[in-house]
Amino acid sequence: MKQLLLIGGGHSQVIFLKQWVKTPLPNLRVILISNVVYTPYSGMLPGHVAGFYRYDETHINLPRLCGWAGVEFRLGEAVGLDLAQKQVLVRSVHAPNIAPDGQAETLAFDCLSLDIGSTPAANQVRGAAQYGVPVKPVPQFLTRWEQILEQIQGDGGRDWQVAIVGGGAGGVELAFNLQGRVKAAGAGGCRFHLVHGGQRLMGGHNSWVSQRVTQLLGARQVQLHLGERVGEVTGDELRCDSGLRIAYDFVFWVTQASAPSWLRDGGLATDGAGFMLVGDTLQSVSHPFVFGAGDIATMVNYPRPKAGVLAVRQGRPLFENVGRWLGERPLKPFRPQRHYLALLGTGDYCAIASWGPLGWHHPLLWRWKDYIDRQFMAQFIPDSP
Ligand SMILES: Cc1cc2nc3c(=O)[nH]c(=O)nc-3n(C[C@H](O)[C@H](O)[C@H](O)COP(=O)(O)OP(=O)(O)OC[C@H]3O[C@@H](n4cnc5c(N)ncnc54)[C@H](O)[C@@H]3O)c2cc1C
Image (cartoon, rainbow, N blue to C red; front, side, top):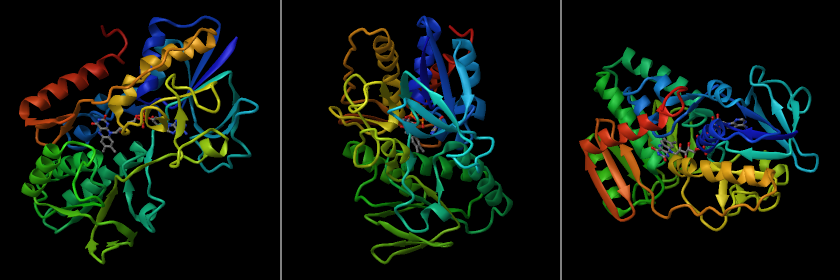
């Protein structure tokens, strides 16, 4: 019996598991290794931050999904890779301080599939890892956000300064939803800053969308610092390369995505930022028995932004090609769409749609987004249609 290891219960691999429920392969043992029990759905995460959704509405219960699929669930964090021996080093998440080379467990595989997401690069800026609150890993971010919200609510009259570093889609959506939540909590004195290295927000989207979010954030008194690169974070201020200093009480970090070093250290071909390089079949370009999808994988022929919607789309081709590879059948190339619809919640039951050159901002879009997201989550509840 061959062994397939799925590392990370990200957006692609939950779709993989859903497909597995319908068409499991014979003579195959499948194990999902995840460092969390509940994996977040990125589409609803900002809405959870804004207080619109409960935790359980925005997270997928992985052991339950695995149980449904007949797949073994292991709570643990992959920290090393031995491609020659086809083994993964998995550290227990119950005891995170144990030495990875001493007491971690080694799991063998015939085929490996990685969907472990990415985290904002905080190590490149002095003090960012120490003082910043990175938006990923999500569990740590949510715990910290709840504490911060409690602190702000506890002293609602104080002139709190909240900074968000990173003006891509994630940072902008976070700014809207954090601000919306704080406003709803009645903390009127709280002031928000959005610091972005580029000259326009959401540079990967069309100019109408950039202008619209700039205008909306301005109307909500979010102070924008465009063209500013944070060079250092101290305990109470952001020091930008231009000399600008921004005093803060809390700083959220939503900058460029980064990958863990163990993929490159293990000998997997990676791009300059450490993301594994995959071909059109989602196989590693260096090791065809390793598959990758979602943020962690860069498609060499189709570079795309890191987005949950794209990770979801890769779920079916990942399932199909892993099955074909194990069954020694020819694999099928996958071509991701060039334009994809991004629906960005603005924290006030409204949303902005961005699709190629088009954009729209309307409350109806929020209702549509809400419908799509709830439908997506419903498929992971056993006995749902
Ligand atoms: C604030 C914010 C808002 C966003 N909103 C949107 C949006 O509205 N729409 C959109 O398309 N994209 C959005 N994104 C981007 C989106 O979050 C990512 O592109 C998406 O989550 C990537 O999915 P993934 O499957 O690659 O990984 P993830 O969803 O990050 O899942 C990875 C999983 O693997 C687990 N894991 C990680 N490392 C290990 C390990 N070593 N061992 C075992 N398990 C591990 C993680 O705990 C997690 O469960 C947003 C990002 C941010 C920061």
